[in-house]
Length: 242
Image (cartoon, rainbow, N blue to C red; front, side):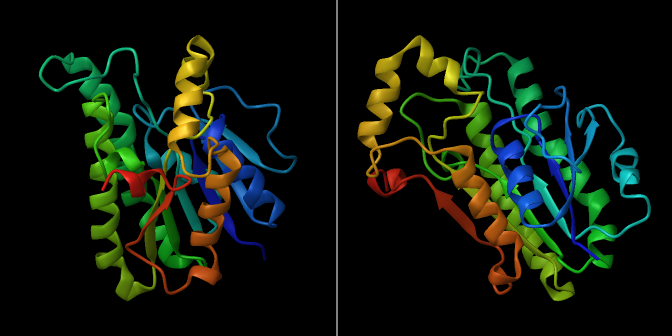
């Protein structure tokens, strides 16, 4: 019997790339997002439109039809670039929305999924955080940064608590990745993209597939002795700002 994964944020970007990678690896994937289903979704993947902020996680997990869960990938994320900024003057609604999606929805789903992960064979959680949760940014996006730092901290705590049961929990921390969420900013300001490429030691932006490959590794048995780890995938960018 194939392993089963649940991937959030699967309507595009990193989440969709992760679904594509896991499906290619023979994993039975349930994909979910508040967005409409992408035409790039592989055949055989079950897509469940779902609002992580408003929906009951038990309803989403009911799509497993009683099967155990092997892998959980929390890839759903929100960054309100046009409204987020310094904590000193950012609107409260930005904090509520950003932490709601990036932290609280992740927490609710993970707590609901743990009993099913206990029954599974893969027993692995990967949460998508960000280098912004590990280091500061040139221009503050405080709600986003705080939410991702909290994901890193929560993931480490879960790893320590669930490790004795054989359940691993890690984060992937992407750097500058060319996702649908960030691409409009580069289209509006091509110099911003060029600057980011030049600041990255590998001299390019990352692709969603780069992060999907890292996620697939951390989920797999090849990473069976890795937990409580933050895997940075950023082309070397973070090494310059320590």
